[in-house]
Image 1 (cartoon, helix red, strand yellow):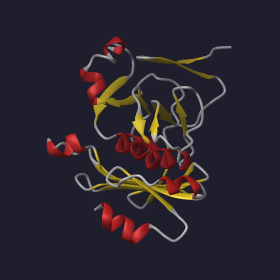
Image 2 (tube, rainbow, N blue to C red):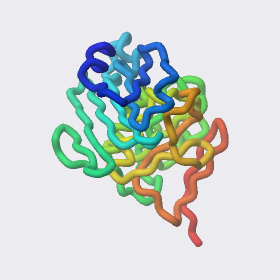
Image 3 (spheres, rainbow, N blue to C red):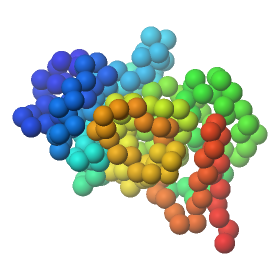
Length: 220
C-alpha cells in the first residue's frame, strides 16, 4: 500500500513521511510534504473492529492543508482542504456546533480508557466513547459525527496530520497539549497529545492536565 501511494501521489520537489517508509531527512527541506499512514488502527484491524483507515495528509511549510481518510470497513470517506472545506462521503460537512459539553460525544483512545485515564469522568453529562485509530477519530470530528477528541499521549505525525487537516478544513480547531498550533515536518515526528473539536469560542476555556482534561464554559 505504501509503495502504491508513494508512486501515485509523490511529485518532484515534494517530501514523504510514512510509518511504513524509512525516514529521509531530505524531507525537512521540502515546502510540501505528504504524511501517510497506510493503515492507522492496526490493532483494531487485527481484532476485526471497524475502526481503522488509510490516512493521507499534505502539509505546506509545516501546516496541515489537506487530508484524505478512508475506512474500508465502514465505507466512510473524508476529503478536505483548508481552501475548500470537507466532504464526507461526497457531501459537504462541518464539525459540531455544540456550545457546551452537555450531551457531547468525546472520542477517546481505547487504550487510555482501558488504563483508567477517563474513569474520573464517569457519571458526567457527556459520553466518553472508546475508539481506535487516531486518524479516524479526527475524521469523525471533522464531519460532526462526534463533538471532540483528545489524545493524552504522544502520537507521530503520520497518526494525526491528515485528520488535523480535515478538522481545520471544516472550520474546527486543533491544538497540542501545550496549547500551540500543530506544526509538522519536524526532525522528530513524535508530537505531544492533541485535542480537536468544533469552532473554538472566546468564552470557552480548555484546561489540560495530564492525565485529565477539563473543558468548561466561562460564565463571565
